[in-house]
Length: 123
Image 1 (cartoon, rainbow, N blue to C red):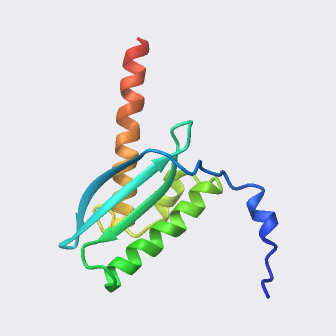
Image 2: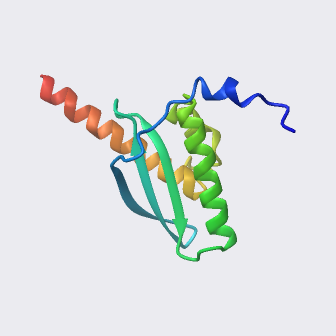
């Protein structure tokens, strides 16, 4: 029996259409290769992230997949991308320590570039 009423949460969760475009890119973290796929809401905000490692079922693959699921749920409940990014582990130089942080930083950088391009188009 759950102590949490699921209806309380689902009222505030932004749902995605069953079919939607995704963008896929690759990253390397700690010598391990990951494939990342991201989807966005209609307004362009990040809505979901999927991360897989080439070694299916390995500890690194499971951790990456699980962290991406949790991040996706948080995004769909309205947690801002920057809040997630700043909550994750970073090294002494401020670089992300794990695959989720690396992927979210990559997405944030892309979003800044798109916003900058839009701004220069308006000028």
